[in-house]
Length: 256
Ligand SMILES: [Zn+2]
Image 1 (cartoon, protein in one colour):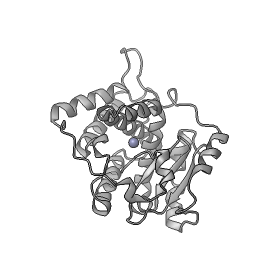
Image 2: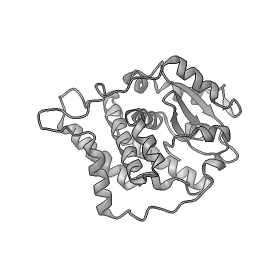
Image 3: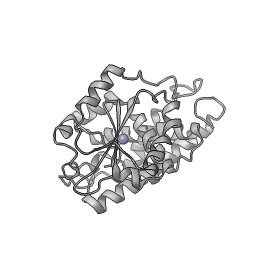
Image 4: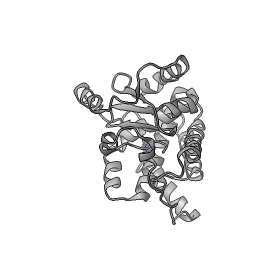
């Protein structure tokens, strides 16, 4: 599933992708256009200022404290060794290397480690930020996405740091509407990030759609599809964030 976050239970179960896609849940019953606009408005509020005198959300001022190196070491130790790819071919390595600009912008270049893993028995495209310390990337995702799409996807994962506690709480409450809203907020952080590093924000929805379509063909419908906004909602929200950022051009907080 695109941008999914693995639970500790997933790790005890190993990397088996069929476990990740084990259950099939129907699409949300609440996908009328009115609900979609409500969802987009709710997510957009995160970026708006409370009053007209302030510029609104600021990537730098709002950035969460990174995890410590001790914590990261503990998280890395907890990952299963089996299935982890330690030697990457040149093309895969080049794509990982391309993430430097996005990580540097968020001061995460020495905070995160990468863990590239083999998805089996069927290829499964997955990118997730585990415990705010390790970027988990499956072999299938690394091969499927080009460097810019990978950067867009990782920028989305960095966005999760900004709403980490809210996401955990919404997951525990099974509040799928809130989870969709938080996914859109992460898209918004990604879009602002991509503008700052000079990449086209349109690569974000393209990457998400490529992952969804790939997994649908490889492993079938996602068990947690109802937690994610639709492709249309993501594209509409992305345009709303671009419009908002354009209107704050020159404020120094939204990139170009
Ligand atoms: Zn996400």
